[in-house]
Length: 364
Image (tube, rainbow, N blue to C red; front, side, top):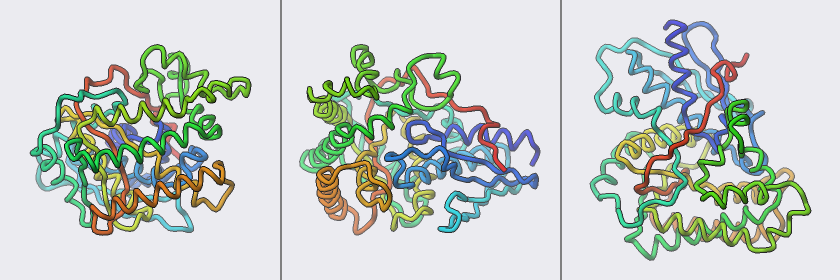
């Protein structure tokens, strides 16, 4: 494999999604045609990455992009997963062999969708529902790895869907009411074109699904100035929670990717599936937004390090997770929820999040 081909694979790899577009990856190039993928823990955010599962999910998406891109140029990927508790940053060593037959039409279609995959945080069309046959089609993708399953809870399943909405609303209300969580989230928000161009990571405020008035309020809501804390006594967390509820009630369904025990490798493999499912949904004209607040809160509850949430918040989050886990268990035969998202029909976002330059991901 040539250097140009390696660079091509890396350019596709870094289009993978990551929490708040933080891009926590590092690539080691030994010079023998392989790529070693690592988690860049220096780009780990307190509170939001307390459970590294989200980091490993994004690493799995990187691997899937490389797999599809390699097949596009005639190479089959072999992933040697090398995570260990002694060296948790190492994810996989990726090697390549020339293929004896062309990439399949379905994989070529997925490759073409890598650059168009996008998170959509807007309100969706509440009057248009995803057809049942589309769910079945997407489920076939999720079945390509043993032990994984994609559970759909649709808005027509009113009782179960309302339970999910309740879980997500309560979780968003909890984190939005936590000052530490807000201040750390503020590190990811980019307000100006100059900031976006210079940083090339984080969330452009224009993609946060806010109307113009809300966007004006964002700097005040996420301000570190203690004199502005009075804003939160006006019920900002409750309003944010209601907005989450409205987002979900304009969606067609929630998807939950279920898998084994939740080890780092399980999250990596789930991330590979997640990327295929995400691209395929976008190609069907279906918008997607991850819903990650609840597992992030629970990771902070279970953390053995310095906690950023109060005893009362721990109590509420623990009860919420217990109820959610019982709900999942009743639908999943004991599998774990590894990734959750909402899906529905919406106009494609006009703004795409940037990526850092390829060389910034290279490490020794």
